[in-house]
Structures are given as C-alpha cells and as structure tokens.
Length: 242
Image (tube, rainbow, N blue to C red):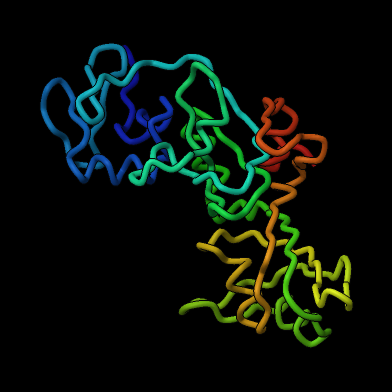
C-alpha cells in the first residue's frame, strides 16, 4: 500500500516552495486535490493516485533533485517572479528543474545563494535549530571603533529584535577614504539584518557581499555564475560532515 504524505510536504518535495511557504499557499486556497480546493494543513495525499494542482497547474513529479550555488550579482531580486518585472535570480540559472531560492539576499547585496527543487532541504537549511552560519563582507562609512565591534559581537537592537551574538572583525581600515571593511558572521536571517546591525552602531553599509554559507564559499565563482553543489557540501550544510 502506498504511503500517504502531508500535502505541504509533498508540494515542497516537488520544488513548489519551502514547506512553510507551501503551508501558506494551502491556507490561501491555491492548492486543489482531485478538483477540490484544500485549505487544511493536515490533509494527506497519495502522490501516485491523487491529482494535485497549484494555482490551477498540475504539480509534476520531479525525480531529480538539484542543488545550486549562485554568486548573485547586485541588481537581482531573490524571488521566483517579481511583480515589478525586475530581474530575478532565476534569470541567471538555466536548468530544466523548477528551483527556488533558499533564503534571501536583498537586491543590493551580492554573493552566495543556494537554489534547489528539494523542499525538505530548504526546510532543513533554513530551520533556526541548525544555526547555519552566513559570512558577510560589509564595507561601511567611517572608522569602526573597538566599542562598536564589541556591541555588534554581543548583539544590538534592530526594529523590535535583539540580535544574537555574532563574530565580527575588521578586515581593513581606509582612513583616507574613511571606510572600514568588516567580516560579520551570523546564523540568523532577519530582513536586511547586517545592514540594520551596522546602522544600530551608527555605520552605513555602502557595499555588502555574502562570501559563505556555512563552509561553502563563492571564491572562484564569478558574479552571475553558478555551479552544482556536491553531496559532501550538502552534508556539511546539514551538519553531517565536519
């Protein structure tokens, strides 16, 4: 007998979106099973028997899972589609599979971004319990003091949230141009977090690049280029390899 699976898990496994996003889609009435709109998150389906539609289109079974590392350039939004018709990161990745971004980078931030059609992988990588680090190189206006570095390390208030402790160090100071380059390592993913952290200590970010996700680096990968992740790298992300 075929095992039934929860609808949101199935949608995520077929690359529709992350599991959490799929739950939102279900609650919004965007998913139907055998011609009937389903809004209950506890709904279970049989993938081989039931006909699943998302926004009126059949969800096709995707057998091959792909995992992609993109070195995102500035000027691209991290969405599958954009209501303002701006360039998206999917314009840079040419694969037959329907992939989605894992997490986000704002339009004016460059660097490491993972895309995949494996919804379970998205869920695991983005779940807070895994505390996967993200390494950023931030260039800010002005000279950053030791006191400001300590504040960033210990956590600062952004919006109505206190950031968790971070690893922060000065890479370069340019007194002539009055610029400081910082390496900031966090494991959270709040909206525009690094920019807001720097603003909290009175420093404006003028350039921001994510150089690493976990131990996966974009060194050697030109801006706008991508490559497949291998099994070892994926295991590293999920804490299965040290």
